[in-house]
Length: 295
Image (tube, rainbow, N blue to C red; front, side):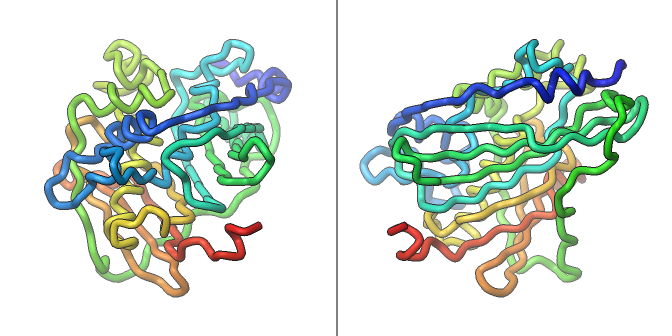
């Protein structure tokens, strides 16, 4: 593989996205991350318009032009991209419908060396039309074999924390459906690696895998049930590192450790395959202060 064209990527501007969404989009997203599949939790309010509530991770698919790495102008070999890390911070709860402006910028690039990965970090904000900040997201992509262009070896960000050295306080198993990625992609990420076997094999996978952000949405549901008593408005921050893909049909176990000051740590795995799919998880479940909402 040849090194990434770093100059081309730095010159690329991710298109701004002005997006309106409604109850149908909110329900479709919830179904895409598995809401309603488990009989162990009550999720009617995520999939039925009568008392509809938006999952906090819905922000991950709003105000984005989709998988922009597929744009030839970015100069990326998108089939070789792995989702490394993802963070989400909400400044106010999401409503089941609204209009947002999404701005995405590439903030950092690292080179692990010839024949090794390159790392790309980006930041996206969601704001109302009047400019009120609603959410902020940061993600890290791993571009396999794209190193060797020169530059810093490491990204300028904190490493995920270690998990507590004790048994988890609580856990929840949530199933995925065999058609999970087929549903999730309707919320905007049309990367064929997640649905087409031939493209998945080009990416080094035996079968199509679930989107990383789809996995994060499923884990977010688990956190809402484990730490928020089912109230999605209590989950304000969430950060994790992806360590292995979820295959549609897997049952994902999320383990949670309660810490101080409304912080929790979490890890997710697929026990049937003996793999950890997300690690270094940190979330805040303190809710939103009235002063913050009034700002």
